[in-house]
Image (cartoon, rainbow, N blue to C red):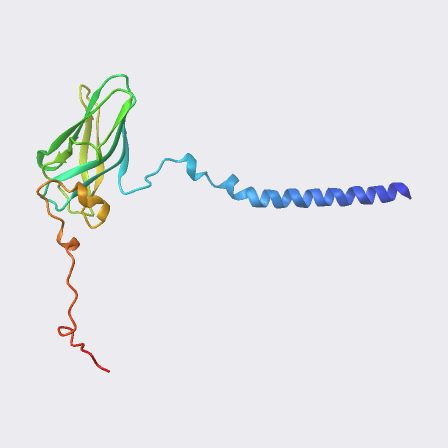
Length: 187
């Protein structure tokens, strides 16, 4: 009789263990069937990412008030090589700018006193424009689509090139006064 009781106790423990294992597998099944987002590189902000040899461009975008207006390129450029390089950016209608990047270092275009300005943006704010990126001294180049943003978002206002004015959509519209809207003091 004692061996039957032990078998029932063992079967109970085995059933509980199997149930716990099953619940654990169900709970962790999402991570098993779906790729981890942290293992994939993606654009987490307004700008784009692009790689060109040892140069890694991150959060690159153009701030401009219009298609035919100058545009400032902002973002970060990392240089993983052991020599200083210059990144060339060629935009619309022959506009171009160069960004020097020290060896094993980076340049933040939004903090640099030497602004990277394209003489014409080539696209209205909200569009993507083709920009050819290349490294000096090599034949390696790539054309990437870069977003154009204006000063609608307050954090980009300071990056508008000198002489540019915010686009009309950023100009505040005065609210009507009580006499203009037909509303007066009515009790």
